[in-house]
Length: 209
Ligand code: HEC
View 1: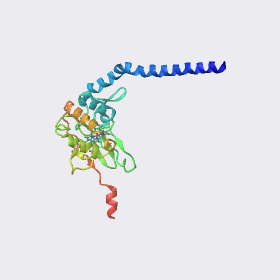
View 2: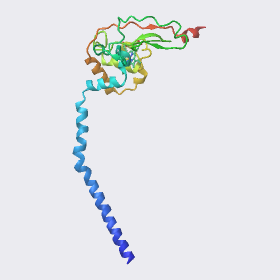
View 3: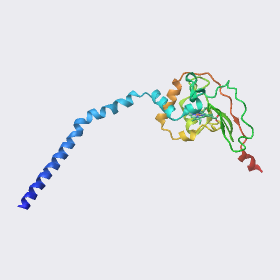
View 4: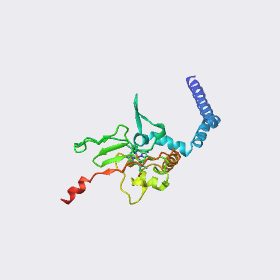
């Protein structure tokens, strides 16, 4: 009696299991077109320029390359000067002497210029203007961003801090292309950024002695 009941129960459970598996395996195929549709549509809608704008935003390029003015909530971007680098006409007083000798690094309030053991650097104009990257080739841009070559030229000096090019050296090429496409599409802003004041390297000086 028990054995019969047990066998019947087992059959029933087996049947239910098979039915469930069958039912579940049928489910996704009927749902698939609806679930897959948004994924296939979205990437096509994002142009390289739009992706470049997004990447420039999340990679913090504006932090240093976009001039800012002081607002009620602190520094805010100036829309018509986006990515135009340290303003040539900014009349900043010289940083306090002895600052870097005492181990400090200083940034201007808008973060477009910095003083440190490397000297003083000014965030570059990276708008589409000829005073920015308007005349650059994509290869120059690749060399600047992934090899830290100033102006993207082979024999140029290294790009100095605080430009964090080392963080970008493993960027995927499609992302680099998208950023370049976006920068080429930006509103041109004419601004010749001051030349960096490069400090003599202390290591090189002590080597000779
Ligand atoms: C923390 C500050 C900072 C951030 C963030 C930053 N930069 Fe820079 N960048 C600089 C400074 C300062 C220089 C100039 C360095 C020098 O003169 O050696 C520079 C130089 C460059 C140059 C070389 C310009 C030339 O004329 O050779 C390019 C290109 C550049 N940045 C692009 C970018 C892009 C694109 C991003 C975002 C993905 C970015 N930077 C993020 C500070 C920054």
